[in-house]
Amino acid sequence: MRKLTKTVLGGLILFGSLYAGDVYLTDKQNIPDLKMPDSNLTFKMIEDYQNYKIVATHFRTDKNELRYILANSIAYNALQAKEKVMPEGSKVVKIGWSVKKMTLFPSALEADKIQRVEYMIKDSKHFDANGDHWGYARFVKKENKFVVWDKGTKGCISCHSIAKSDDYLFTKMQSTFK
Ligand code: HEC
Image (tube, rainbow, N blue to C red; front, top):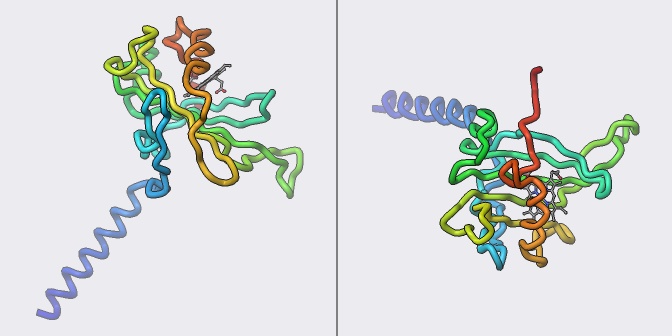
């Protein structure tokens, strides 16, 4: 009986460690409970974003901000296939960081403080007013705490209209090979 318990326990531990080795750990449990007032989109709707794939890296020179663009699997596969219009359920996330010089090598910059997490979601049921079917949400870090962007989504919609012919997305899949 003792031996059996030991074997079962051993098996469980082995399974647990194998399983843990095969998943990405995220800060999911710390995603704040925030909601954009005009689009009703919450931060939790992208609670898995740290597991999305990076599709591009951008740098805004005027804001001195490094940005990663990540896509959930629906958006990722559509971008990869160069689809003209992103399918329903596509989520594209942008994370922005301020940058600082590396102490040991000052000509290299590294990400410093996280400044924002924002996203677009393709959802034609809820967002059909302007014909783009994208919903927008932005959460910014203020005094070490995320808060909702209080200027609404009108600005998002109008500026992203510059990219209307690319389904309102500025992002293109960034090459990692050729
Ligand atoms: C004045 C123009 C402007 C406004 C306003 C703006 N964006 Fe963008 N957005 C851009 C540009 C340019 C990029 C690509 C460069 C970059 O990543 O910064 C971008 C990229 C993005 C991306 C990555 C997908 C893509 O289109 O490339 C997301 C997500 C995003 N913005 C969300 C938002 C949200 C949410 C808002 C409103 C709260 C917003 N944006 C407001 C110009 C704008």
